[in-house]
Length: 251
Image 1 (cartoon, helix red, strand yellow):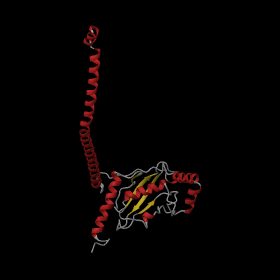
Image 2 (cartoon, one colour):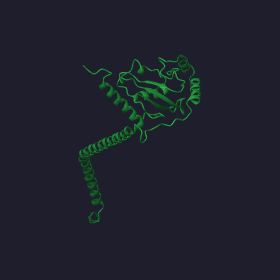
Image 3 (cartoon, helix red, strand yellow):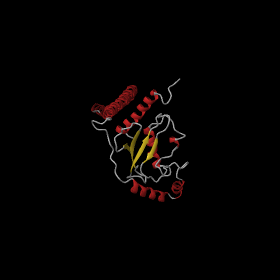
Image 4 (cartoon, one colour):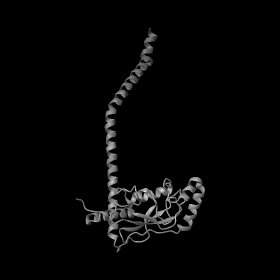
């Protein structure tokens, strides 16, 4: 039988997955997302800053988001909650973004990076099929300009204070993890660059092989054209040469 969700094997697997998500947030965060303002002292509980996406009424706002992982993550979704008030059809009065992927449609394949991207996406385009706030959803459908004005007003009132991200410093308990994350990310970038260079070289080699096949055909056409030009010039030369002129005069 497999290990139960609370077994040591599951716990270590859970920690590795969460730690990987934290590393990605440090070194390669999703768009408009970054680490929170405080050091991460509990791997199962940390903060993310979402900067209001451009082109939305939340642009210019800074939104700290509380991320609480279950002990048997990823078999249960994390609880993600905005710590500031947000005027949005899918965010309740407690700051929780209520989406199917955090409930019935949750899949263990979903990563924290995917969840954060989903949140940013919903800030762009609210999910109106099952809104948690019907009043805001109706306003969005009937008077989107008013909805945007109210959203911007709440953003200025509750989310205008800038928040700086905290990154591990030397001496922190996460310092070695941070260094490992940077090294791993650098290795990923180098490997990606190596693959791109290999693809470029393969494409160039294929182009050269294609040119080698096409070149004899092209050279054959050029040789034929050149022989025609030479023959034509020779005929012109024979007609216009002095010897031809003298012979005609003598006759």
